[in-house]
Amino acid sequence: MSYDAIAADYDEFAEVSLIHRVAVPSILALCADGGAVLDVACGQGVLTRELGRRYPVVVGLDRSTELIRLAGNRGGEPHVRYLAGDAAPMGAIADASFDGATCCLALTDFDDLDGVLAAVARVLKPGGWLVVATLHPCFEPPHAANGEHDGRTVKLVGRYFEEGRWWPRDRTRLFGQLGWHHRTLSSILNGFLGAGFRLDRAAEPRAPAGVTAAGPWYGEVAEVLTLRWRTPGG
Image (cartoon, rainbow, N blue to C red; front, side, top):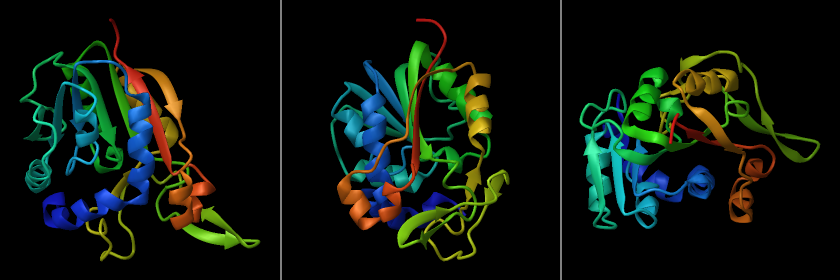
């Protein structure tokens, strides 16, 4: 199953979801200067459109042709364009084409993370930046759940070391048939370092009051981990 099959439902979800209300601002806060920015695994463009308000050249890339179609239909700045294609190897994009890149909540979609990182490193200019927001692997491992302890909302976490793709018990959920690819924090960091990236900044954004009012667990743990990386040179 692919995102094409759930594109319409995902489009509605991404526009109003609590996790995007944390992740998107956290990415924008760490984006650096540049003229051309690539949004990797852009989906229906919820982040891409925001980037279009800040940069003169923005390209959104996603393997789902249906999400790319929905992104184009939503409109936005005329200098924002969308491409359908895999994040690895990004064969349609030339080397050193972009000053910066972003990736919003998509690391858990990639089985071949090494291939994606190698492709991003290739299309970035020397000294280019990459800002990634992902589900925090320490608080969203397989089968994590929200619970209550002493009258307070808590996060129930286990099976942290079980890396790989997993599926929730309820396959009727929005992502139930797609699943997630879980990696430990050390695996994520080592993957970027192995691809030649240098860690430049890290954030565990605190959710705003409007988010925690709707989802109290967002006020208890960091649901999102945001990292800014640099390529060598520049």
